[in-house]
Amino acid sequence: MTEPTKAQRRVLEFIQGEMQAGRPAPTLREIAGRFGFAGHRAAAGHLAALKRKGFIATDAGKARSLRITSPLHKLRGRIMDIPLFGTIPAGFAQDKEQGAEGCVSVDVESLGFKPTRNTFALRVTGESMIGKHILDGDIVVLEHGPEPRHGDTVAALIDGETGNPISKPKIPSIPTCSRRRN
Image 1: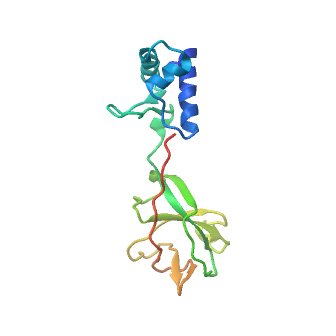
Image 2 (image 1 turned 90 degrees about the vertical axis):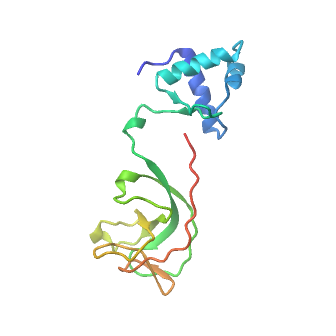
């Protein structure tokens, strides 16, 4: 990958700054205005060079589809945001209803199963699952679904209390996480 020129680097840093501030990708006119270019064609030329060098990507025909790319992007698997619902005790049950408190970004290939809208995560408290290599503070990714198979480790509700015996999990409806593009 060829390094960007000083002017291209400044344009790239401006784009990154706008997107990190939560604003949409700047338009050609906004880039031209920021750097005092006479017209938007100069901005388009810088963007074309950055795209050719692999620093940015766009979706053809879509306004403000500009996004920053990483040289490591090709090595990265598909990432999915999974809702994190709170904690689950490893051991004794606890009577506690929990709502989503955030999301966990996970490489789909590392899960061992294909995530669906019924996939969720919980933070483990306690140490009774050490034999299964699940430690206090770990985040476990679970799938609400059909009857568990022999050997599955599941989270379960027993008489309204959460715990970890081998049983069918009963989890409330699972909200989706919004994903912010970087």
